[in-house]
Image 1: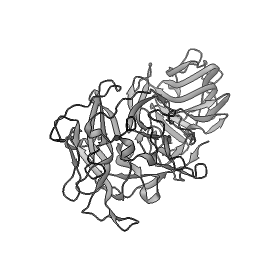
Image 2 (image 1 turned 90 degrees about the vertical axis):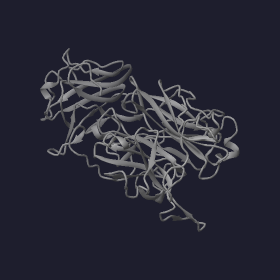
Image 3 (image 1 turned 135 degrees about the vertical axis):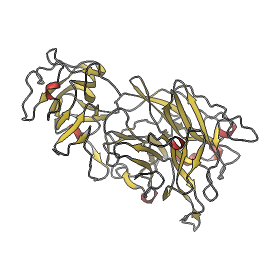
Image 4 (image 1 turned 180 degrees about the vertical axis):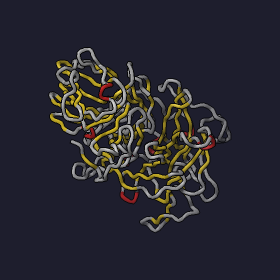
Length: 496
């Protein structure tokens, strides 16, 4: 059962996958793929549940500690596909600097296949007298704002001029600004900082904090084309270990983060949230995902869970008690503390993500433990099916969608049908009547495992007679998982 995190009204603008302004009971889906991540498409249902599909671990150790500037541990990181290659930005700590404001290196790696990652010699920063390293910088910013970076989230801005095409949000120390008084009477100056770059190598920091709020853990940001604004997610420290969100038109100034995601304290009374790892899903309409770590205070361990949203503001847990990436077996590299890296890569019909794992518990992450062999954070890859984070499942059930306005001439499904199972779809017109020739009873049985397969009715897959008209789908599911549906123009189904 879906659990609402906050009772925040969803307000979606008109367009593909949004509620129509003309008819509040009709959804404009256009020709965009639609994910079944929540109950948005369940106007009526029986016997159907939402199932979250955990990521599949590869067991790979894609990036490990190996250089002297990484001698303490690796930490927060980001990946993206960019200009025909895979790019990674990560931070690491060295033993010599620990624990000071000069203990962190912001580094770069890249890969041709997403499995083997190189740490190129960039010649940008002199570490212990040599520029033969992959360090971008150690501290950044003007006087009064110069500090290390911590918890950095990098993204590419599609609307920015060339000199600021890459942006990042992180923790920064701004001693020239008003600080926060600690319980011991001291002052802390950690606030949310912004950076920008033309190429992802040479970075500049905004001279002032972009949000006057205490910052901790990893932050993330991106340009949200649905609202034409920048959004940032991170720990909303004024509320505790929970996730907050803020938005801005220019990236340089954000209001304090508003609480958007927390753990159900009744079900998990000793659990808190760490890094958000939030993203707008790029391959379907109106879908946002977040992969925070559940921090279990009683065991001091963390694993990765998943929340979903249609607008990035109101979030639900498809299965709050089920880990998206669970802790590994005892004595493995990811047996105690797991955090999701930011970013998603696509390889054919697979989604690739990366997480960092450690055998150390949260309270064991001290230098004397970190430096021991095998205790540094390790980055590893996990895979998911395209559109395959959540599915509508049933042993023998059905659902009927709200009225929808679509464009195109075919209907395509992403589904797995298990032995003796089936999926069948029928069209319903604006008067609630089955469309002749396209009823559930006339639908050819959908079977097997297909990321994209056209629905057929007695050898006829054409649905253009309903394009632009309010139409409902009745979907019968027997021993199957339905991940997504979408209307399209022509065949095969064209993926953006």
